[in-house]
Image (cartoon, rainbow, N blue to C red; front, side, top):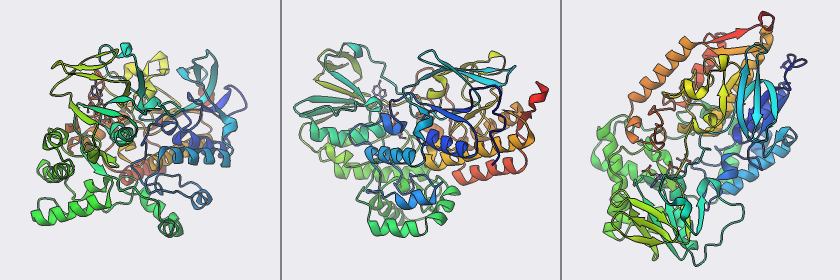
Length: 544
Ligand code: NA7
């Protein structure tokens, strides 16, 4: 590629990348290889993004390790050895550190640098980016690689700041592991983070109280050491495998059932569910083609999991509290756990249903619920989730053409073209932004696809001699309508989930990810590029 030629005058950098997780690291590598002068600004004191911050006990990816890894380097994928079927947080972080060193990325990353504002200068066609330390840097292009689940949320519960013990958020877990021996620990939240942390916290604490507002569907991971022979066999055909993954439904090669759950006998159905339950992981939800489209089909899968919960949990009253109801399985993110339900059979583990008996207040000694019950605690763990998908981008005061604030433009929900650009904000790219498969996919696959698409676009722009690119409002409108229409044909919007912004008071309820599948989406993006980017306007610097 012959980029970088626009770099001689003007901005400090060709490209500023915000965030040094999976997305930022690959963006730096790819764009720098293409000849651009790239700088990465990262808020954390280390690289790794999600995996730098979410170091709570039990933190593990719910995508298998051989797939949750970069595909851009055949040598890297051959050299790196994963040790478990599902990678734990320390191993992912070690992998990213290896990648950063192997590709000499660290020299272009500024750690401990939080971006607070980014303003587009119409006249000069560049972005002026401000950091929390007050520094200003300029760049022609900005790549938002701050992650989909990186703006943690504290619960809005009175008295949180009066708690006398230690408060730990799963997404800001301390680097020095807290000693919980002898402690009475409370956990608020039973999403993926809570569900993964609870079994490990139960082993470490003297007493564990879990405060559950919504019972979630959780599937066993059946995590195990990765058999070196299985890994070697996959490595022998890794290139083909990666290619198939790129055009798959969700960035993982799963067997997606082609039958309807309603066209088979109850026995056949249960046999299929049981087989998938035994395999473990999220593939359960692909047992039949209509589980996320038809409520009656969905009920059969939900009932199967409810039966499993009742089987695993000895105390029937506790089991009933853990049985989810009121939303389809899969409409809220299904969690993938290791021994979650069985943890409630341990002595010293208590489940409080705060939907039935809401938390009234946190006080210095613990948590009091509306019924007057008091739960004394020494440590309070918040597994209360994130302002998902838009939180990290909107935490920055982003201003586009004519000073338009992104927060204003997205006041009724995020609007993007392909989840990659947003009209009125030239030269700004969103990696795995709302309107793309993002959180419904294997993130690494989607990240690589987005970074490559942006890099190819910048290359094409350079060839035209242009240095400004922007989504056309009409193309964006059509994309937003398409994304909405697709999600409305599924059960997803019925989940009241963070996919919809439902966990953040006041956040507009818009189903944010693209549900049409990773392969379909990729083909669409490829077509857009092959047709010369009809949804974009590009500009010649001479016209300024
Ligand atoms: P989630 O999935 O958003 O889970 C947050 C949990 O915290 C969920 O159970 C919430 O209950 C609960 N919560 C939030 N606020 C409160 C208050 N005020 N009171 C009681 N309970 C509360 O976040 P995670 O970190 O677990 O997972 C996020 C994603 O990261 C995950 O899906 C993977 O993709 C990785 P609610 O359901 O809202 O009733």
